[in-house]
Image 1 (cartoon, rainbow, N blue to C red):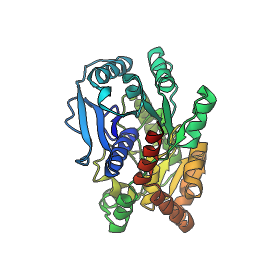
Image 2: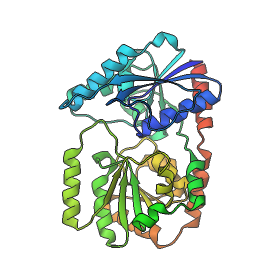
Image 3: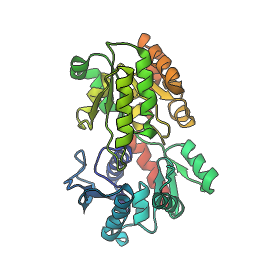
Image 4: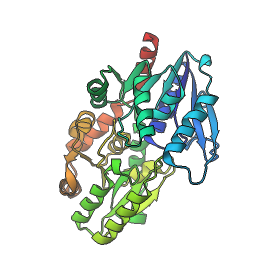
Length: 354
């Protein structure tokens, strides 16, 4: 089949990581795959090298100083719509709200459901849900939200994970991050409301361990969270703690950063799956997540679940106190079962059914 996968960015956000890994697995299974994306700010390629079997089309998308989030999203949709040629493909698969608005007739993966208050964004979000002819969710929890809110039945196809890449980093014992920072709690996803960043900050302060650092990695996003980030930094100063904010970490450096963590914290308020947390399990790192139905579904007995800053602090303290070999073994086995080849096979079966 000639398959187009559409995403909104070249940066290492979860949906983009998903798109590239799925594209490569589909191509390895013999499909003809092209990934379409917006080349924001003059980007010449994705955040990592992509398998040669996958074609790439990067649509130029220059920055406009002072542009509002709403205007940027509307311009993103228009730029992708004007460039895309749907007639060249048997299957058009949009991976996010922007690309689902840019095409008329598509499969749509709903990774998670947002709730916007800006009218333009709310309308875009609604169109991206109701217009696609077929829906995929990466967890039953999100599929349930679609069913309850819109009466839409979605196929559930969980994410794959590059488990061996993170397991190998753990086996190699690359301790450069530990040598640089000492023992640390790690979270990946940046500082934003959806990621539960404020609760994690409060929980870290409650640990009251001067030898334990809090490291925040990642955070590429279309939205403007500068006000929230400023509030977060002010609260850190008031609490007397100094987290380390790394920002985007290189693709080749990330596994060692994850594998060296003393505990991986994932306090998100809303997720569709939790790919970064699954990568931590692959590396044999203790995982603490917010107690949400989606995390209970995805991680089961491999994670510690908590609610609120105090609960998160208690769960992290327990994870740090002594290795839980049962949980760690369950986590490594769970991550190893989530392969991209399996995800690709299920996507191919869905495409065939159309």
